[in-house]
Image 1 (cartoon, helix red, strand yellow):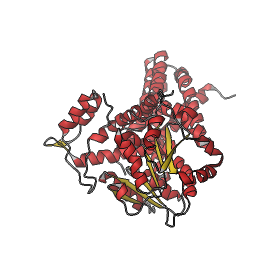
Image 2 (cartoon, chains in turn red, brown; image 1 turned 120 degrees about the horizontal axis):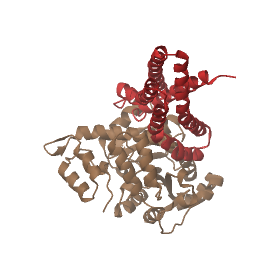
Image 3 (cartoon, helix red, strand yellow; image 1 turned 60 degrees about the vertical axis):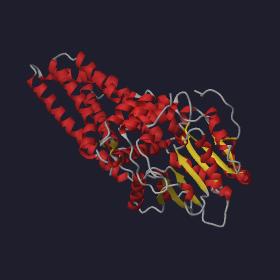
Image 4 (cartoon, chains in turn brown, blue; image 1 turned 180 degrees about the vertical axis):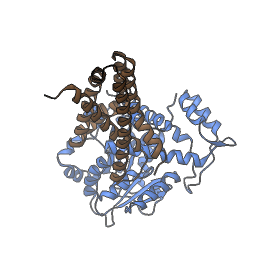
Length: 175
Length: 307
């Protein structure tokens, strides 16, 4: 049986990386009028992923400092895991619905796919910052100490920064 | 109060020559203020201007950005694919007229639909034209088509003065810009120009459309102008009956709705097509559509917006 100490950070990192890929895609949308732009979107998603990896590295550093400076490193890690679990309770179902909607859009015929866009992907994009914010604030609120809460807030801010940063860095003007 | 779109007010061109005409900022602001649209007033107030005249270069750049964002919406909703699914049976039904068929997209903007059709060669041996009265999007369409070596052309000016008649006229999101007598005149002009058929996609007028438009433009577009006009479009979209009445004023072309709102789940019918075809070709169209011909509707009734 895999312990939560490993699955929680792995699941959160997985969601963050997937979100980074999609953030890169969104950052680039509406800026290239060409018809064939698979390579353009691949580059954008790679940029989103890279930004997301950078955010995760920064967060790992912050978490490492929190664990290293805790009176008991084992307890510090457990606190972070518990706080991460609280985040997962909100982010997990949201991520599940997003992935299911994307898969549905990719494989379903056009009319049900349109249905999915209007009822799923569109609203989910609008909800994303609110869901991430709610997850981060809930986790911070229930965190056992300030450094752990700070990690939850840092993770949320980092994830929400990827899309605007990639957009500002590469995609402000039409190409 | 009238529902106005900013993009209709901030550009003005000589239709014959494409020459931009000066647009006085205060006139646009007054018009929008008189319509009670204070958000639109703020958007226009932020536009660049010189000596009280909107800066045409800045407006052109804004329109190209907005059209590019709009293309992203059309890509996601697969509008060009939907159009191709109807153009194939339409072109098949009208048959050979002795000339190479020509499809002309009216109000083409940056030409997404025509370029998509050209890139997929979805219609076979067909001349593909896009026409718009605004030179900036037409220049962008031409540049994009050249960049991808797509076999299609874009023209600035009046579509109905193009050399040679179009076999089929198309448009996407144009009909709701035409108000009053202009709507009927639009269909009559296609009839007089000798078109064999038309296929015009526009926003389905449902009670949910403005909410859906708000949500979708908010989620997918960045330009405040695009977000504003997207919702205004949905609010002032023509209902099915209005479109059928206006299209019926062109006696040579029989109007048909395809999958109209009353026959569809509104979440699957954000844009719906209005077809028209020379009456003699109608049986051939039904044959070409096969089972899908059951979705053609020839009669509508006045009523409230559904859903």
